[in-house]
Length: 106
Image 1 (cartoon, rainbow, N blue to C red):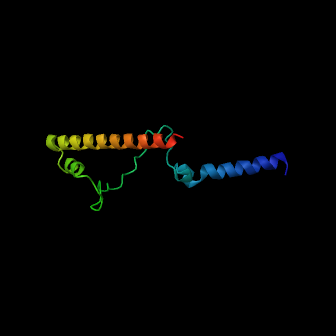
Image 2: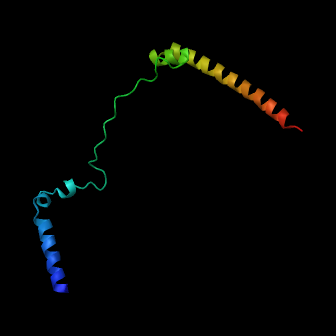
Image 3: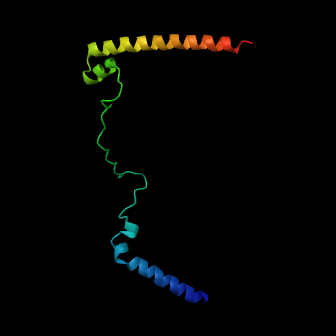
């Protein structure tokens, strides 16, 4: 195929694309507009939120009370529970560290 024939084919294909009803309506590839900077981007809808916990979960009472009835009293109880839990965890870690160190000695 010579150069002139290639140009004719290209011209015909381009003309068909430009004159196509979907292109004339601005619907090339199903897109009516291009949003380069997400100015008009739609935010996907969030699915309905799931409950914070299942009834079968072992949720500490202080946490349940704070989430169900958030007020100063339940927050204070939660903080007391949390501090006690952290202290027990630190003590348990100290014991584990001591045992680990003694096992490492020859």
